[in-house]
Length: 282
Image (tube, rainbow, N blue to C red):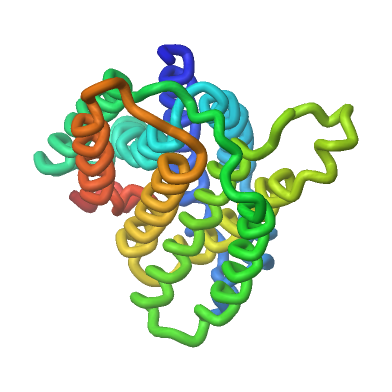
């Protein structure tokens, strides 16, 4: 359990630091078209060294995330990933001299405390595989995300940011669930390539990156990241408990619920750091 929690925290550090680099790189390129999903924007961003370094940290974070999901319940990993915004806030304050308000510093402390609550109360990872059609359903969800993202260009800036951010979060949430359904994780075995969950991991990650990149370049960053936090935490946590057998330690269900809700709420207070505000902001 301790190893899984440490892996989840390491994942949070990687993702949070990567956000600082990627957001700065994304803002330095022309947004181009007004469509929701903009692969051209992503290609432009990939020419920036900061974005590439961020991708590298994301890759390391993903490996840590996969390892953590094999050891602890999804709700622990989901909360830790959402809490990466606390890491982003600290890194932005240190590296970019971004000023944090007193409320935001309190939110950082609350996030840390709530993760400690989850670590103390979390039970073992569930061993259930869920309904038979769950793997295919994840692919359907990803397909719907691409369609929704393409249509998001027709709505207003604020609504578009929310839709794209929520879609990105759902895409990343698909990855969290699908990783648990890839069994065994062994590319040398044929069964690995016939498992729809493998392709859900890839497609969910791609959808999440495309939608988030577009969301950060349009509308309100705070709105976009708030949507992402909700999308990548609530759904996967519920699926883990309802269908995959995730549990808590005996008598500590209340602590898990409280810790999860508090972690998400405190993270939302830090949502402006999903795009890393300018140093002059507070």
